[in-house]
Image (tube, rainbow, N blue to C red; front, top):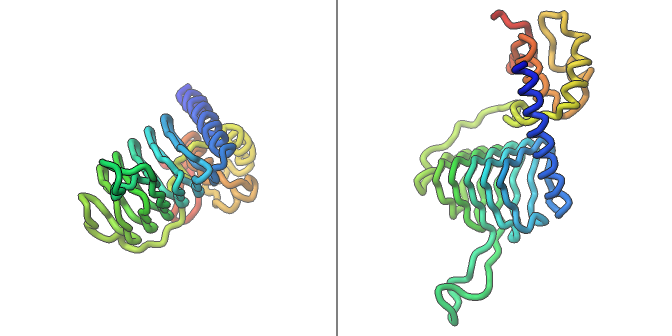
Length: 236
């Protein structure tokens, strides 16, 4: 019963998310595969929005994308974040506190960036790949690759590492129709104690097979060995 409820809950979330993304694409946004955009997210001028694959954007996100906004693949953005791509011209001679014209500056967030809760990002900022932006930060300057930024400064650098997966490849929403198809096909291999990823991909050749492996193992008493890329029957 619990698994059925979880499946139905995911199906509802999946189709609501799919509808949000479809609306943005119709307005000109370029959005990749396996992207999750949560509720109460607003994108003004989405024709200037580009989002890669395996991206998560949390609740209450806002951006006016008129200056251009690019979010690279594998990036996770937590809730209550704001990204502005334009600003008022406060140097205007004739008016106070700012002038009538706007200044437009593109924001670029590169691959595999983690942005925490309540972060604000100003126009013209580039956040290089593999960086972490701590909760509550205001970012108004370029962040170098692999940096951990909080409290208005870079605290440390992340170690370079070789990775295999983006988080949303595994833990994102999954297409319920794909899961039914996947479950039917994997039954051919289910009697075995271990199954290789490439065998599974061979019978289910689709981009979301890693996410479906993860969910299927949860539901069928199997464990995932990500390092060796196999699934095996659980010992518990």
